[in-house]
Length: 402
Ligand SMILES: [Zn+2]
Image 1 (cartoon, rainbow, N blue to C red):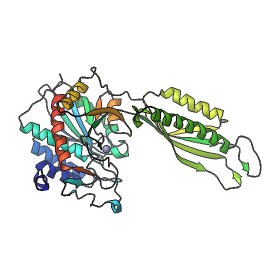
Image 2: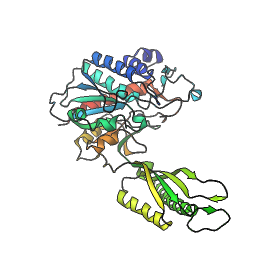
Image 3: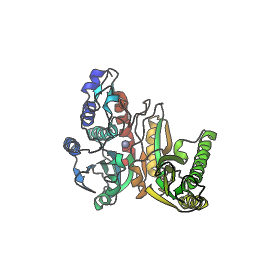
């Protein structure tokens, strides 16, 4: 296909129209997204419902296609409407113009994360409907707010609502990542994010003395222990080529604070860490370890959490999960090389999994550099349209699971 054919392709047109809506943080206005989605629903002759799980500024739109056996648990195709901010000076294309170059690369914020996926669901459903297909299970396409801020105004409260329970969701698809190679990652789990701060108090006094139990000494002890743990994880990763970053615990010192002036020993220092606990880490044991270090350091240390995600079991990728088998048979039939793995960051999938709904993260963009949250984010028109075909097969299989 050449760029003229891409220009006039119906699905590419819808996609670019959606990309031109600047639903960008810090204050995304979702009203134009809703207006666009309402038109899509009308065009598809499918009902759309809009929910407000937290407040009027953060809607969730759900377009539904009822199955032939609507009592069966439904399929949820989730995407988020919001995108992260842009630093315009770093872009060579206007970030909300959705320009396409001669090779068919479409440039815009959200081309990868994840307006592509939301529009590919719609495109796949449009093609399936036009072909006359019908499926056993109901298919819901959800378009949520606030994913990029952690889902506190979107998916997190939504899964708790009666409206969500009424959707009777049995399985979810959500975002994955682009792949610079020919294979496709598929994500079945996420690590637990713990963002924590040690508030370390100690003997304060004059800088000319050698006072016992100073905050600085305790700080050093804690820092050493955390960095040793970090080194162990680096070694794990280096010594086993099978492991990916999502398989190990990551620990990073992200903030330090404290001090009064340079000749005063301060009463308190703080050390903040971003920790992502691997799936095999026992949370109780981890916290016990931190508490042990805090007392070994001399006590007088408090631990505060900005985030402390609970353990969420992974989605099964074996014969115990009929949705996995349906997904796998679709991708096998299409000859796709898929690589099941644990997601490095966090997505809305975790809220589904936490409420007991199996979910996979999958964005069909291979041979594409990973540009999420980066400048000049793009996707190729051919990759986008291939993804629509991939979804047709996957959705057909998933929606016909007995
Ligand atoms: Zn995303």
